[in-house]
Each structure stands twice: as structure tokens, then as C-alpha cells.
Length: 190
Image 1: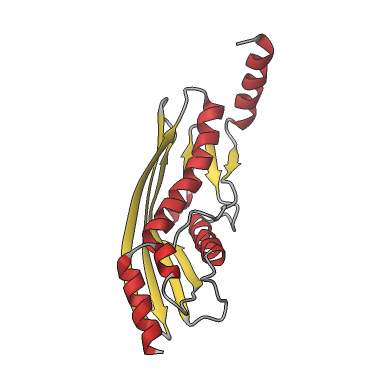
Image 2 (image 1 turned 45 degrees about the vertical axis):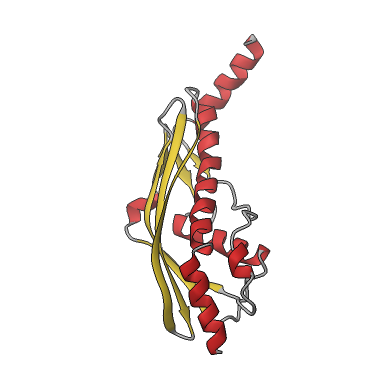
């Protein structure tokens, strides 16, 4: 490692230690909802997204804190992610009577490993159609990514790893055959 690189990396580490870092804005495009897209006339909107306890909004990445770019709330990060995925899948309709809500139950990120970073996320997703509950299930995921002994690298990888973990959670929800069945029945009853 040359001396210039070393000091640049040292500067980055010093500048991010002890401060807050922003989770990246959610980038849709995980190809979620492929099965749901096959059900005609299905559209949804997002409702109320909350956390089971306020401590889920605190994520420590070594000497830094990860914060959400959406109202400083990780339940809002999940809601925005779902909204973006529904839009890119042509499943979003702000006037839909099919409303998806969720309660974030687990929101753990571990960036302390020198080789691997992890995230464990869990949420209870509820879907209501015309005011009637048609779906209520908990989805949980475990996600891993490459980490590093170097704090700056580990923190950056954890920021990106968190976004991927949320995508994985949303993929589990949107590709759930029980959700597809509930939505298909709802369309048939209209």
C-alpha cells in the first residue's frame, strides 16, 4: 500500500468515526412481484408502517450510527422500498383499495465482523382490501455481505448490505404464494 493511499484511507476512517452515516436511498429493481404481476388487475398502495419498539431505529455500525434517509425512520425506509418496488413492477396505484401495512419487528445489523457483516430483519405485513384483512404474515430474513477490518470499508459495505437486506425482506413478502392467492381472490370478488 503506498503512503498516499494509506493517508487517504486514514482520513476517511477518521472522518466517519463517531458520526452518523446515511443508509443509501432505496434503489428498486429486485424483480420482486414477478408472480403477482401475473395476476391481472392487481394494484396496491402502502399504508401505515411502524416499529414494534423505538430501539429498532438505532443501528450502530462500529463507531457510527446508521440513519434512514426517509424521515429518519427504518419503518419508513421499508415503506418507501415497498412503494418503489410496486411502482417499478407496475403494481402501484395511489387510489387502490388494497393497502399494505407493516410493523418492523427486528432490525439488527452487525458490522463488527472483520470478514462478514450481517443483518437480520423481520416484519409483520398486513394487506387490507376494502377495509377487510386478506393477508397477515411475518417475514424474516438473514443477509450477509463481505466486511473488513478497516472501519471505513466495513461501514460502507454495511450501508449497502442493509439496503440489500431490505430488498430480500420485500422479495420474501412480494413473492409469497399466500399473498398471490389472497390478491387473486380479491380481484375475482370485485
